[in-house]
Length: 63
Image (tube, rainbow, N blue to C red; front, side, top):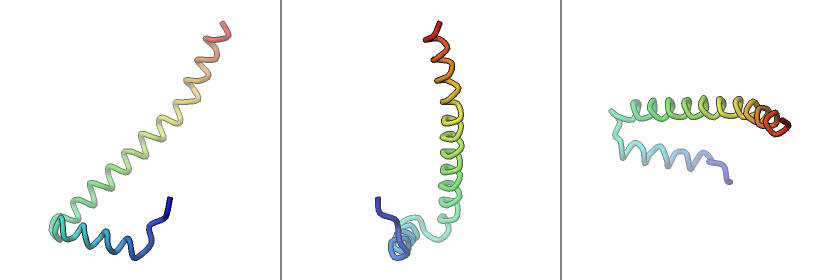
C-alpha cells in the first residue's frame, strides 16, 4: 500500500477545507482524532483478550 506523501496530504487538506469550511474544520479534526483513538483502544483490547480465549479453549479441548 503506497504511503501518503506531502503533495497528497496538501490536496486532502485543501479538499477538506473546501468541503467543511474554515469554521467547522477544527471540530471535524477533533472528531476524527477521537474516533481513531477509540478504534486503537478497542483493537488493543481485542488483541490482549485473544490469547486468553485461546488458552481457555485449549483447556476445554484437553478435557
